[in-house]
Image (cartoon, rainbow, N blue to C red; front, side, top):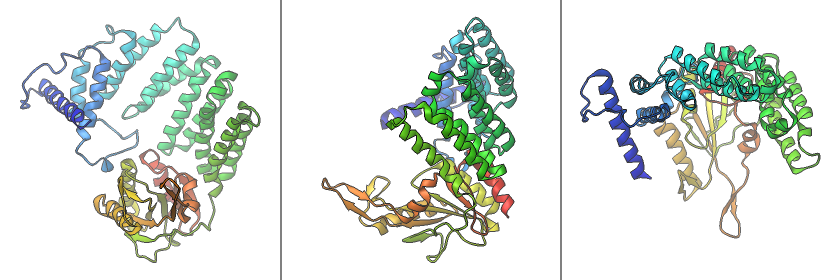
Length: 440
């Protein structure tokens, strides 16, 4: 695998250097050849674009550069190379099957007018297909525009309107797209749009055929969960929980009564409710630690008089680290605390640890030293036993019992009241930022 990776990186370097030479005319130190000679389809350029993007970031610290979709972008050097590869093709000549790849290349390189020409041609080619088939293709286009960097909201809403105009025959694809758009809107902290799109996803789901509703029951559940979040942020937990009650009532009958599938579905629904049920609580258990790093040993969290964010840490999560750094830069001087909770598991980075103290110190050095994260780390020793075959069986720790089932980071205000529980990442950073700013 290491050899294959080395070869791939070498090829990417040659491709990259050749592409820049073709664009700028500057010598690259690599023999000048046509870097695009073997690329016969836009799909190959699309794959090369992803490789170049990864190659660009290979030796850089991703935990400082990961952003939400609206602000994310493609490096200029990659833009130049991809634009040169895309220039080998045209909307008029590529087969229909390659139009999506070509349009994505245009989106990568900021050629939105050409992307729209490609999308319009693909829809003309689908003119005689059923509404469901056209809806599926439109949903692919809308999701491509949603995932573009930066997101192309103007084009997205244009084609989403066409998708909605197809009505019930395209209900499944409308459900997917509106749910994705709701999720995106919340990443911008646009709570009004997030709720509206979530409700549109729920409405589309109710128009789906019976068999489709059975097949996509967990996706239908997602339409309610993405709608509950902005409702809770704007109006509190009661209406959010009421919506989740509606979800349980409507979707539970999609599995046979008393079956294991229905029990599993009900367990999933119950877990979905947990974070919302904790909103407003002012008496959460204090964080337990066998050792503290970046904080004195007698530290008490959640800390009264200060805004605190508590979350479990199990290993590398570079996008989360980017959010940690940015929020600390904005609010650390104002006393906002970010606390990682972790537990010993008998190994660190796949190496067995002789005693919990060594593992705790390894975790502390990794977070505070190697990553240099501006957080406090609470390392809790896990009690364990061994089963007959020698494998280790860990007991549930106090922190895990109190916090891990909440499924996300927990935000406390100065009075120690739970104000929000949710994913902590660039995708949700705008929500956390607005909540913290409102508490200071």
